[in-house]
Image (tube, rainbow, N blue to C red; front, side, top):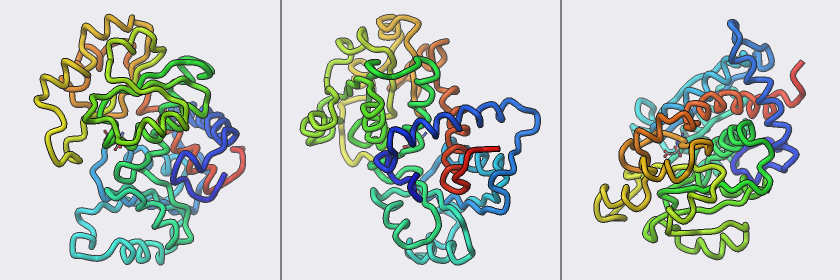
Length: 310
Ligand code: NCD
């Protein structure tokens, strides 16, 4: 594996297979009473989060701790960034303390890449603007693989606010690389401009019609409507969005009860996903969270220790 994980493009298919195999071993640690491996003892991992986060930040922290690394959290609010310090100065300050890995979330696309050019530490992109979120894509694909087996020729439907979604961008790349057939569904206003050329290049389908896509899905991934990134009106009313693109109770029936439903969280219940779907037996939302810890343990392990676990 490369030294940084900035994009799913940093990973070969072999890397993904190795990461998943290690994640499966790490997953077993999660079920133990004593959740501690010595693999990263003496290593320091800093979570540097300039955007809000519940699951990504805490799962990176837990992952580091279970591997015996020293983990520290720094958030935009409460750091000197709020006193006007530049990103570069903040990052160089932290790096000067002698850290082994920086896990970065930032509102600007490309921020993790820039940071990786400034420091010697390994950098993991935990979400940069509307660009990429590689560990989310890994944990989603890992969750799907555990549920469906090999993803080759499986049909995964991604639905929602694609324009603002880094989860979509990382997922579509990784899933197609793993051989899945992918259809992405959004209203025209939330379909990224230029998506047609990209769809052709990466080999995925686009659609405005959710009801047409659902009956052919082997898995459905709902994506959050990211109001905090919207500058104008992308749809007339919340109700209208739900009617056209929400995973409602009726649409859940269209899916059948075997088809897994994923959502990276946080969910807007009642907007892109109805409570019936979020809480259904086929909902994988909490499986994704628990897989997130295992996958992040695997990523930190391979970036920092680099050998198979003893
Ligand atoms: C996602 C993110 O931050 O990009 N959340 C997450 O990491 N679980 C998706 C989102 O915010 O909608």
